[in-house]
Image 1 (cartoon, rainbow, N blue to C red):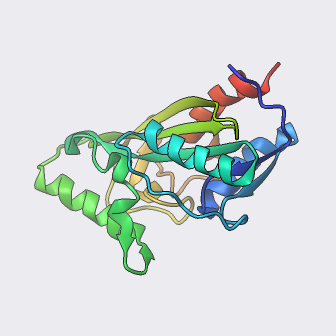
Image 2: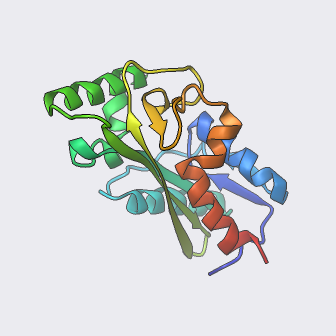
Length: 203
C-alpha cells in the first residue's frame, strides 16, 4: 500500500458538495485539495459499470492532466427492491438538458418503488468507492457503505443528491435533515475515507 506524502492533491470532481466534504476530511492532515473544476480539467466519460471502474477513470485522468496525485469518488444509491438501481447510474437518473435535477431523480426512485410494490422498510445503501491515483499510474482503491431505508416525501434541505429521501440505519431523520458534521461522521464516504486514511496517511 503506497503512502501519500504529497501535501496537495486534486479532487477529480466538479461537484462542490464533494469538494467541501473531502476538503474538510483532509484538512487535519495538512493536505490542500483543489478540484478538477478549479483547474479547468475536462470530465472524462464514465464508461464502466462498477463504482471502482468509474473511480479509476476519473482519478487517473486528473492525475495525468495535473501532474498531482488525484482522489476520485464514485458513489451512488442502491435500492434493494430495485435490484440495486440506480447504482452507478445515480447521477444519470438526475440528468436533464440543463443540468442535474435530484428532486426529479428522487421522484423517479419513489415511482419505481411504487411500481415494484416495495414494502417497508424499502432498504438500500449509499456506496462510495475512492480511488487515489498518482501520475505514474499507481492507484489504491477503498470502498465504503452506509445502510438505510428510503422515505417519501423527501425530508430536509441539508446535504445533496438523494440525501433527503435516505434515513440511515439506527436513525429517524434523513441525511437531508442531519447536521452535515454528523452525516460526515457516518456516511459511505466517511467509511471509505477511514480506510484510505489508515492505508495511505497514517504511519
